[in-house]
Each structure stands twice: as structure tokens, then as C-alpha cells.
Image (spheres, one colour):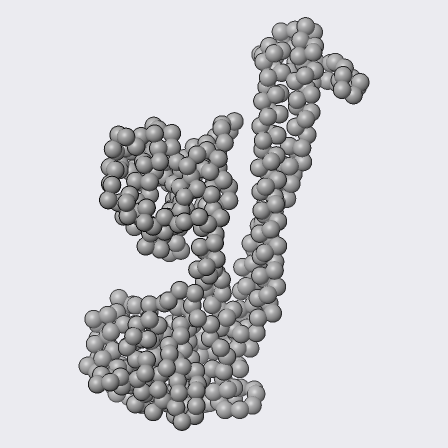
Length: 473
């Protein structure tokens, strides 16, 4: 439910915004922003939400959490209108567009809150209608810095009201602002506690379910690998009975001198007895080594599952819809937590223009990164024809890796390879989901598909800049 024009007028009438000073602008997510005001009524928080189905402007009585990293539009407004005073706040006709005029020193700014569910925006202009910035930059509408926005003209030309709207009466006590604030927190569409909790439940239960299924597969494999000792014993028995194995034999019946039992072992008729025994020993060594890796993966998976379950439980108890909305929009990752994760990650990490590049320096680090620190859409790079590091670029949602970041990663891949002295080289690059492990190959070895080629020349300046971006452990 979004507010109709009569409800917006009532909200503005109750608020009496003219004369209020803007003390701070807080943006908790890309579609929610609030203004901390001080006026005759004391300190208040004016909320503007652009969320579809919950577009609104009103006073909120709930704390708005700060974003973990500064968001562009809030930073812009804090630099322009903080300590300014609101001179007017009115709706343009019945158009659900609120114009707030702010005087800051000798300058005047206009904030237009367009509260349309499918085209909501908050736009800041100067007195002449020149757009200084917009909460949502919409090039097709011309709503970006340097464009023009003057909705007063369309409001004046709109003619008589085509449809009558009444003022709905939400349950609860207090002013209309208080009732609306409570309504949206409890049942008001996409930003209500009920809807946000359901979204959190879907998100987390899906992740927990996939993790539980993965753990089940790992435990089955652990059970299979836990019998590795029988492979070694089989090799021993074949060698002890090497004279009894004839060329072309498919089975060996012999005594198990460890238990005294009579056993039957499968043989490869194309191999000699010694080669057959070595096959069993090789399988034993792989399973024994793999068992340790499996148990580490299971331990890490169980910890992650417990963390997700604890986080979901905490979200289900959260009473502030803005805090819950912020968590779901940002993933709840805090800058300090990201830095801590960087320190714990194996290999080398570089943060360049908010992109994360990870380098594995040997087979063990390459394998560890593949298993625990990268996902399907992350980008993988490796130098052709030379042994060397795996380099990964962590994907950012909705973003394409810029060319200069790709060249950064390419230079790192070349620098941490046996081909570094050539000064240039060709690289593979593809997404992690297009890698498959080489069956029977050494640890960390992968075969890429759908790979592309990148030719890189060593750029010493770029490498020195990257060294300044390296995350210290």
C-alpha cells in the first residue's frame, strides 16, 4: 500500500515542517532515507521510502540504522543541506510529488519526493530546476546530474482530479503519522516486519538447506574414504601372493593375513600383479589425503550452518523493520568483518576500487581458494603454458568486471608465474563455474571451459600500485 495524495497532505499538515533545521541525513539502504530535524516540535525523524508498494513520506518513531559504508546520495545531501532550514513543504496538486525547499546560507535547494510505486525517486535541484543529484539516477527520464526537473508544470496542467480518494484510518492511537508508521512496520507491504521476516526466512532456509545437502554428500564421501585402510591391505595381500597371480586373472582369492579371513580381490587383467598392487596403494594415498580435506570441509560447513541458523533466529526476533531491511539489502556484512575475513583468507588479497582480487601462490593455496573462498560467478585467471598462481576476481552483484581490474588481475597472474621473466604472456580467464577438477590429477588442478584469452604485458607501474592495495595479514 502506498499513500494517496490526501493522506500525503494530512501527513504534511501534521508535521509542520517549515522552520525545521536539517541536522543529518541517514540512508540505511538504496531506497530508504531519513532526515533528522529539529524545530518547534523538538527533534524528529522524517522518513522517505521509495520501496515499491511502500512509497511514503512520514515521521518515523523507529531508529534508522546507518549504512556500513557511506551511500552516495546521503553523502551529497549531507554536504549541501545539513544545517539548512526548511522554508516550505507541500504537495504539488494531487500528483503525489512533495516539494521541500531548503535554505542553506544564501542558497536554496529543492527536494522533490515522487511517491509513485513504479517510478519513485528523490531528486535535488537548484532554484532553476537544474538537477544536482538524484537518489535513483534514471537516464531515460533525464533524472541525473545536469538534467532538468520541474514537475510544477505537469501538476498545473493536470486538470481536475479524476478520482476521489479518502483518508484511510489505520488501527492504533496517536497522530496519523504515528498510525502510518506503525502500519508500515507491522503489515505495510514490502517493508513490513512480516514481509521482511518471510524474505529472510526464504533466503536463509534456502542457504541452510543447500548447505545441509552438501554436508550430507561430504559425510557420505567421508564414510567412503574412511575405508582407505582396506585399500592398503589389498595391495599388501596382492604383493604377498604375487606368484599366485596369473596374466589375465580377474580375481584373486587369498588369506587376509591381518584378520585370518579368506577374501576375494578384484584385479585388472591387463595389469601385472605389482602394477595392480600399486593401483591400490595410489587409491589409498589419495583417499587418506582427501579424508583430511573432507573433514576440514565438514567442520567449516557445520560452523557456517550454525552461523546461518543463529543469524536467522536473530532476524526473526528483530523488531525494527529498517534494521531488518538494511540487513537483507546489504547481506549484513560490515566493513570490519570484511577486513577480518581478508586477514583469515589464504593467499594474497588486493582491494582495488572496491574490487577484491585474490592470488593463490601454490597448489595448496589454489585448492583452498577454490574450495572455500570463491563462487561460481567469480572470475578465474591463469597464465597459459606456464605453472603459476590462480588469480580470482570476486564478482559484484549486477556489475561487469572493468577492463583495468581485469588487467590488474592479469598482471598479478603473470607476475606470480614461471613466465614472469618473459615480460608478457597469454592468459586463460573464465568463471569459476566453468572449471572442473582434473580426475586423478594433482591437488588444485582444474580444466577450464568457455575460457577466453587475454594477452598481458608486465606493467611495473600497475604492479607497484597494486602493492599499495594489498591487504595486510
